[in-house]
Length: 369
Image (cartoon, rainbow, N blue to C red; front, top):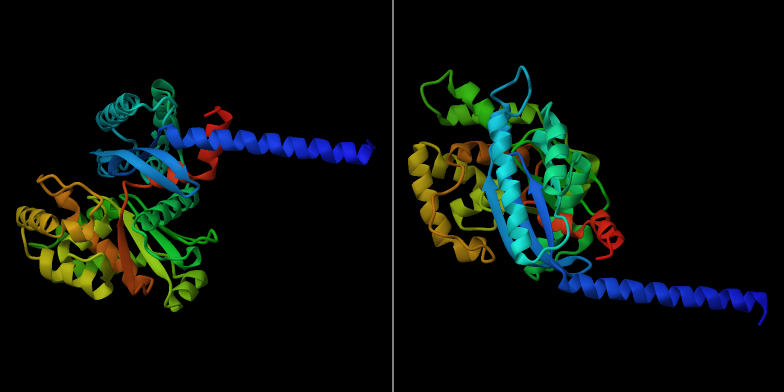
């Protein structure tokens, strides 16, 4: 056998062996359960799932716990620290997630990300490092660009779950939380929003402190103040929005700004006029208690339309102190960026994106699945 033939033979054998190993890993991954954790500025979220395709997961468990980190951080502007009390709540939530994941059959370490509030807090990184070590989590504070990528993967997975026909080059994802928001596309273009609904809540408190009540004028002023903080619309986003085929998908679960708007009107396709109507005509002018009662009824009535994948117990509507700030932020961003409409899809934070992200897969393979 010539040297050249021998070399090609060795390469072929190595390729076959590599393919066999990858097939074994893939088959094993389809049976194994993985856990993903998204620590946001207002909630901690857990999803346990099987990976059944390169861009698809089978969720077997999903839960969330409210931990108002962003609102807590606003109370200490001088030190810019999260309180020991709120971090204790965070630790308890993460500890429960680990216990729940193990009981469900997850054998590896849950993977997770911490977002805006931990980027801001002076003690954010230190806390995440400590809790990751103590609870054996693969956890890190991520920047907005990676957060946007996880959001895009989440939106893509959520859309495919519903068998919607949206091509990859037509999809824009919109991830909006308590401390920031991101809009991104398949090519890695990202619009980084510097504020979230927690920030808008603080802005509304400042404005309404100067008035007797929250009026339409108050909300209009709030929207104008939000827009002053937003970067201009980039060319890539303007070009995408010119195409009729482009779909912006906003995702989240019961506390997301998109879910709130959808619950108000019983629609998942939300144009600017619908969001404006929900803000000024449905919520404004009602007490917080009246808003909560109304939305509790509406969310039950529209459950099959808004989120057929999400079980809705007859419980109080979440985060009622943030209802007006959430819709104000949604309307302000849509107006500022000239977004005609956004489509809502249910997802528990960016957990699906964490499970589908390339780095997550590499780490699982290195661990031997």
